[in-house]
Length: 101
Length: 147
Image (cartoon, rainbow over all chains, first blue to last red; front, side, top):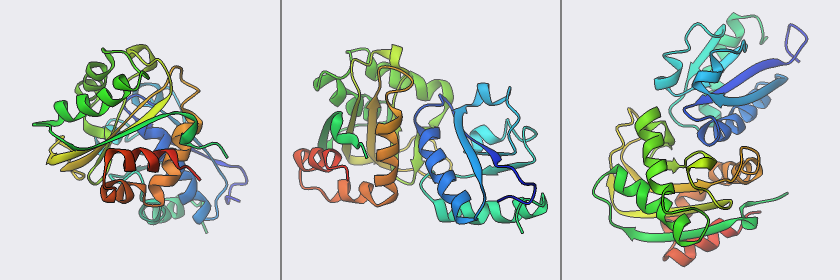
């Protein structure tokens, strides 16, 4: 469970929102599970993402550069299959938000 | 659980491509040859990258090409093309690319189970298995052999 008592909203973004971001969604789910956090992970395209209010955004730099103020935690990842790397990248920013002990 | 084996699959080795556009067209062309996409689909896949950037290079050495269903998808399919020589997509971290996967899906929903299965297998090392396969048929069998 998160410290705040409800699942974190995680958004995986890519250009079209159906291929790469879906694979990233799976990786993000693995990472949140590894961190022991309850999360609802969705995937979408970068344009649709601008209308959403997630807690966490993950994506490649070419997309997260445009989404830096969309969520309290925005993490840039190059390798969409690297669940261990994403887990480590998420740990500190999630702690800073008080969402991870 | 459902795997990629319910979908059209194909593979090819030694694919000649002088640049990323040719590589994407060659991979998507396997979907056309298999009847899963129309002749326009490969150009739609190239246009996706031109419009949105090289983010389809989603892990070092591997690109996942696709277009939206209206780009010419007839059926769900996943194919893989191993390039004779790697190409640059202009990705800041994941170039060069030697393995191009392409998929087709006829609506926004029907690809979800297919790609979820593909993602699990990629995380378990499918890319290197495809790189080690001796033939296009061997690659097809790997794509077909979802757990």
